[in-house]
Length: 133
Image (tube, rainbow, N blue to C red):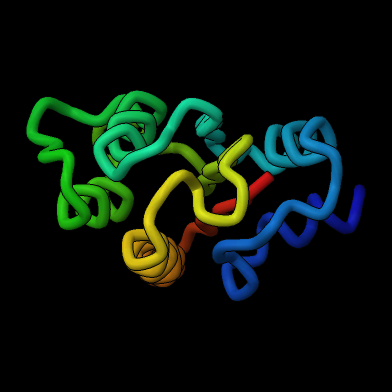
């Protein structure tokens, strides 16, 4: 087993990180750890609305998703519409640059949501990872 495989199962380390390995390595280790992975390509995202729509599409958000930051926080801490047997989750953001296509203020809010989401899932006994590639 790889070190990454072991780390991906550690709820205490889960959170938001800049990806420091090839994307393929993350994909393979997440699959081995039986984590549900979502990939979001941000190459054409230039606004909060486009960012939220990209995440909603990737996580197959239900119709109640309100396309605002409160809805994002609620949805990421819920995911009840997905397989209940998932061992944890990985959100992989591709081509987002340093700001994920957001203003500085919106980026700060999103990072806080990501940290809160990891904490929420930690209490539920599952790791939730966010990687920025």
